[in-house]
Length: 301
Image (cartoon, rainbow, N blue to C red; front, side):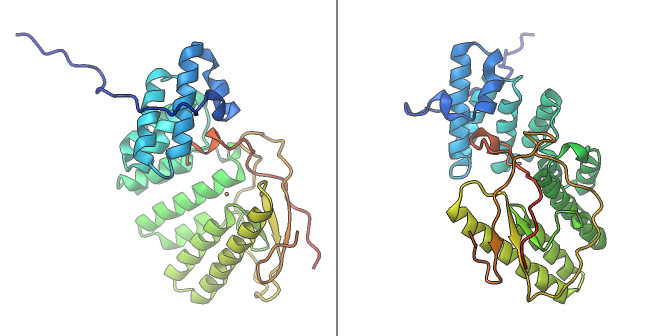
């Protein structure tokens, strides 16, 4: 009996790339990973990845097609697999996202997307597997933002399992500091407030919700004044002098800079939140600034 020969992979038509998109539009760090490819292939892959970065927020379906085109030509290049994972997650193909995230981790040794892996397991209805995945991570190799993302994902998995108190514990990390606002602070504060509310601790929840709003306002104000926002000092004179929960693990350095961190810009924030003076796996395709940053100096009271 003769068997029909089928292609190993489904057919895929490359989406068009506008003429004005060039390889140099891709972040240099990502572009550097493509050096092992032939020059012509590297240029085409870089242009597809640049399109992924441009489209993922507004048109994730089209971004996904560009990511497929890039990964088919650069299957052993970590950034190509990471882009495919990120776009797959955005369009709701969580099984593909998880597979590609695992491949990216194997190729690169980077654990920076561990939170997204936990979220993918949750989306597939496997919160317990998500917890196991998160617990396998070496958190000493994560920067502050990645640790916060992992804490939020792990807390969500605990909530999926009905473990509300444990969900709160997952969020009690050093970055849960009500006196300072980093890019990750509003989401962390809001997540903490939500779990407190689930536990019936409404007064505390209201305090942390207010802190999340203040941090968001402060970050927005500082962002308008500077494109290099990392950390802001927050003064909360009208809040009760509560102590943040005891942290369980310490902050590491930036993922791209390792132990040496880029110094952040700082600003004091008044009670109103005005200023006195931000996976997804493809964030690095455009953004050259290292995440994390040095602890700020104490603001004058």
